[in-house]
Image 1 (cartoon, rainbow, N blue to C red):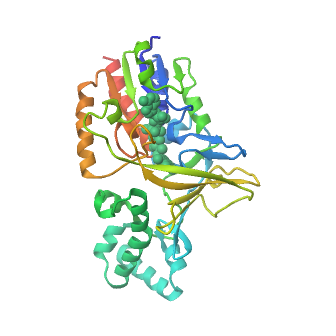
Image 2 (cartoon, rainbow, N blue to C red):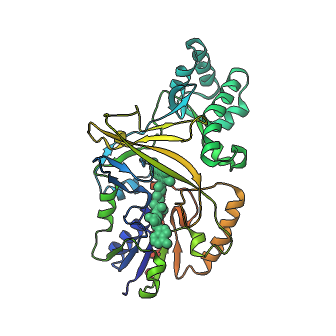
Image 3 (spheres, rainbow, N blue to C red):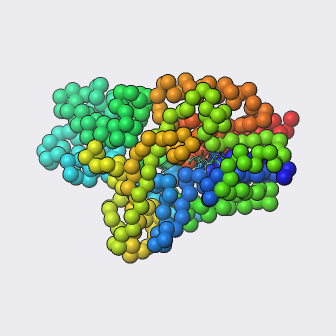
Length: 377
Ligand code: FDA
């Protein structure tokens, strides 16, 4: 078979690039996907009980980028949805990011009022204060609050998720965890938020439906490399695997999902509930809250963080530590040597955690700034 482009992976990165190349350059693309479905980790499907589930963990779409929102809106309508998360602290389920409602749920009224007043006095209203900043700048009652949140919300969850002390992780991880001085329980405040009205998989189906795009599922690209003639490749799999781990493995955390169907309409009050060290799982997910599906039954999934074994389990979260970034740079240097033939992109190709909108933005920019420029030379 002869194509212009071979694209490895059918997640948001691969699908966006395939769509752009097919429609904007009118060139032939073969998308090779080793799983038995399109959509990468954003894939959703109906389980045997008829409930629409996210197979690889809940995916809520949120972005401030009108470029990304408008682009994806060509392939789907949206169901408005604002994600909410609770965390179990002292046996109570309170909102995260930790906000004024969390404080009132956990502390006696008078004390909560005092904390609210102090927080607003120091930082203002409707602002997000990174937990580290609160810890550094606070004194007295606020210092107690900062330690309380750090220990109960951040430390316990981080230890379980990463199996590392927060101190061992990149400072940016701790810096990102905010205390939200607000009554807003939404997990995200982005301008655009929602879920594809009919699910993510139909959205991917529409992106890839073009006469210039061919799709091969259940196929690792190694298996077909010798039989395909192509000008260039876009690789959205793990970059260390591409180079046969020549500089060692890039570390990831992985997750195991245990699904359970229940004979009740809802199991919990919101889509995600986080649990501390007392439980084996970190989260319980219930996607009916996201999808808005009506059914007397529900399906939930328990999320267990696990050690990643290269080539055996799914790589989910690049582990944000300096030494890992250094190792990634060695692979980046290898990629630079072959950039005329192979382009690397995506969460695994760039060894970088991207939200879906960031993966799409990265793909659109790669197309516009690099591919389009080179092709028009
Ligand atoms: P993605 O991993 O989706 O796709 C890569 C594809 O390449 C995979 O399908 C893989 O099978 C394929 N592949 C790899 N090697 C191959 C090979 N050798 N041959 C053939 N195919 C190969 N984001 C967000 O915005 N909101 C959210 O709520 C969430 N939630 C969330 C939960 C969890 C648990 C995770 C891990 C991630 C999220 N995300 C998220 C992030 C989101 O999943 C991410 O942005 C996209 O999956 C990125 O898309 P990519 O195409 O880059 O990778």
